[in-house]
Image (cartoon, rainbow, N blue to C red; front, top):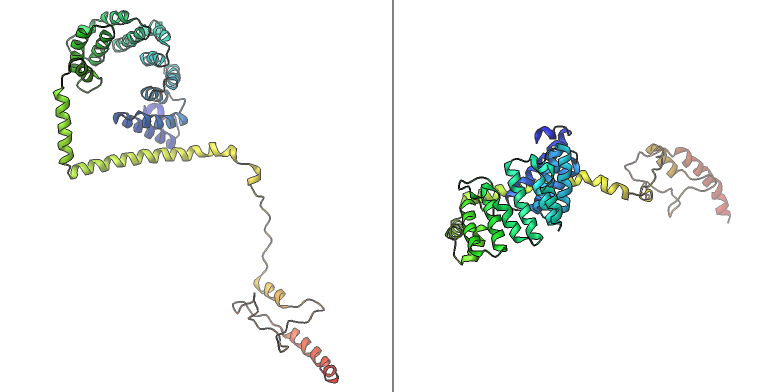
Length: 342
């Protein structure tokens, strides 16, 4: 996987890799929906990488999105040239309600190139497609043709093959034989990959001791919760926080593409040119000098206003008003006799 991701830029390669790892961890925790969210982000940034499309297809299949899974697996097949996805693709056709197309994939020339495990998985899908078509006996016979069905040694496919055969027998009305094969599948299925134990209990009414013991162990572990459990819980929380940060980082990278078309020219205000700022002394001087033909501002007793006038504070440099005061004094001296004469 790392080799294929190296074709991406450094930061993008790390981001896609983190999402694929988070998707794998979510599948281990039996949370396919969360895994699906991570693979969608990875596919968004690396849609032309075969391993990414393969992971996206497998996770979509596990989450029940069969159409999306089929599209991604077809793309991965074109990119990588591998036919290993045929069993999953055939099962996606079943999920979409097209068992005939599933059987066509089983009979395709590409199916002959699969390894033994792939051929067995494809036969299991074919048996299910026969049942979808109402051919219960044909479904049983399809699996009976496999010599691996009678192999007593456990193999990677043993649990799934025995369970599929028991399920086909039960659907065909052979309850006693189905019970025996569900028991055999349960013996092979140490990891709980199938529902063999539940199906066996339904047919026999028996209580599975292993399930009961596991339940009691879970109760004891809850009662004896210690610091180690707290540490494990904190570790899981950190992993969840990393997954959330990865999704948030991906959302930030995706946001420009989504929001960019929505920006209109009306929302963008034109930038007006900035006029040069005049020195503070000139501003104070213009504010203090009266216009031509108007008398200077005076207080109640005819005196010029002081620096306490609103807008002029002592923090400014006081200008020199000597010329203005002299003019005002001369004008006042000329006007004073006239006022006395009145």
